[in-house]
Length: 127
Image (cartoon, rainbow, N blue to C red):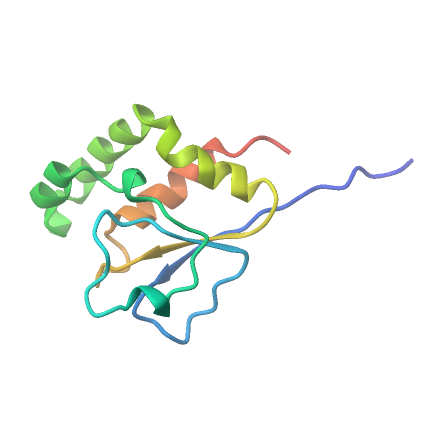
């Protein structure tokens, strides 16, 4: 009996300012604003997906305040649910290769890329 080949995709997170970070597969900047202090020619990206980032209003409301983290996650997921065209290219890329989500937040645990990562894993096609 032969085992079907299973494509296991990895979605990684990488902070844009960690120059030693290794970006495997396709790399996408998932921020609405270009990261401060980074020249555009410094980043090797497969895409800058501004529309997958939280809305300006949500980003300003959250202001990276960990106290607002739970509510931020709820609101951001609602925005993602309403905007499939923004995140579908990431799912499509992940169907063929590893994907790295590039973000700029100082807080590695409370940022939009963390929420997006989990959201995308929940929306990858089954096996």
